[in-house]
Amino acid sequence: KTSGEYMTTIKGESTDDDRARALHSLKGLALNMGAEALGELCRRYEGEPLDPESLDRIYQQTCAEMQQIIDQAG
Image (cartoon, rainbow, N blue to C red; front, side):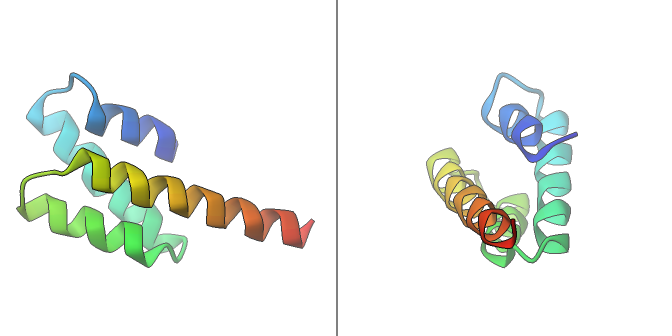
């Protein structure tokens, strides 16, 4: 799955189990790519109530930063 698919599951009409799995997977993906702010926020939300707006804001920032890196490399 992609990070966007995980975000759709996290923010959508999903079961608690599906949401928890998607959050855990997004955390791993983010940390593996060096997106520490997003990974740490996901880690925090594994144990605390989710704030979807904060998560979406950090996710969007991360995507923009990753796109800049890709653009600079190309």
